[in-house]
Length: 420
Figure 1 (cartoon, rainbow, N blue to C red):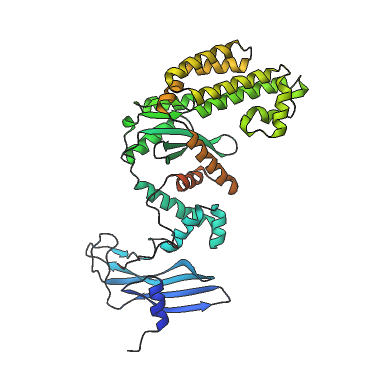
Figure 2: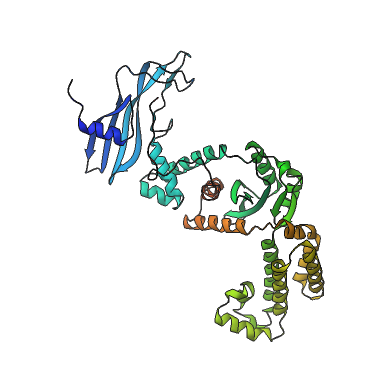
C-alpha cells in the first residue's frame, strides 16, 4: 500500500476529522479563489442510524453532498463527500449525520458559528457580503440557532418582568418585548402591542419552565392593553408604572403647550429642545436662551416647571409614603395651572396612582428596557430596516437574551467534531 499523501493527513487534522472520515484529495484553483476538499470514509466503515440511533449499521448507498466551510487563508473552501445511507434494522434507509454539519444544511458548523458571531456586531446583509453568501441563507442560520438556543432556556426563576413595545417598521408596526428585570435579559418578543402579546408571553414563560402565577411584579406603561393583559395573564403581578413613561407623558404635555403658544409668541421659535432636554445637558447657548425666556411669563415656562417638578419627585421620594404626599401636591398644582394638557395629565396620574406609588417600593424602572430598545433601534437603523418583524425579534434575542446555548465563535474555540 502506498503511503497516504501528507497533504491529506494535514488537512484531515486541520478540519478536525476523525475515523472513519478523512480528506482523500484537495483541489486548489487560485483563479476561482477557492479550495475544494474531497472527504471519504474507510471501506467497511459502519455508522449510526440517524433515525433510531442504532449503532454499527452497514452502508446501503451514498448521496453526493457539498458544504461551504471557513475560508482557508483568503480562499473560499468547500467540502464534498459521498455521504452514506444506512439500511437500519428499524427497516428504514436514512442518510447518516456527518460530524461537520447540521442535517440538510449547505454550510459547516464552523461556518454557521462564524455567521452568528458576525451578526452580533454587523447588519445581516453586511455580514452576508463579508461571507460571500446570500442574506436569506444567513437569516435562515440565525433563526434556526436562536430558536434552538431559546428552546433550552430556563425561566423558572423569573419573578419580576418589564414589558414595552418598540417600532418594527415605519408606521404602526410594533413588537412587544418582555424582560427579566432582575437578570436584565430579554425573555420574549412578539409582534403587536395588545393584551394578546401578554398572553403569548405567559404561554412562552410556561413553555420554558416558568409560572405566570409566580410573577410578582410587572413594570409597564399606562397602556390599557398591557394593564388588561397583565391583570388577566399574570394574575399575581403587582403593576408598576414606569417613571420613564410618566416623564415622557409630561414632555408630551409640555410640547403641546409650547406648540399652541408659539403661534402667538415668536420668542419661542427655535426653542423646542431646551424644554425637552435635561437641564444638565444644555449647551451654553441653550442655557442663555432659557434665561431670557424664563422672565417672559410664558405658559411654556410654567409647563416646564411642572414637568421638572414631576421629574424631581421621582428622583427624591424615598418611599411610597413620601411619594404620595409629593404626588398629591403636584396634582393640586397641575389642576390649578390653567394648562389643559397638564390638567389631563394630572387626571391620568390620579387614575393610575397605585401603580405609580408601587414603583417607589418595587424600585422597578424600565430604564434598562428603554436602553435595550435603543440598542435594537440602532441595529435596525444600521441595517436600514428589516423585512419582517420576525427578523427584528431574532436580532433582539441575539443582542439581549443572553442565550447560553449558541455556538461559540470558531476563533475562540476548537472544532470538536466526532464521527458517527
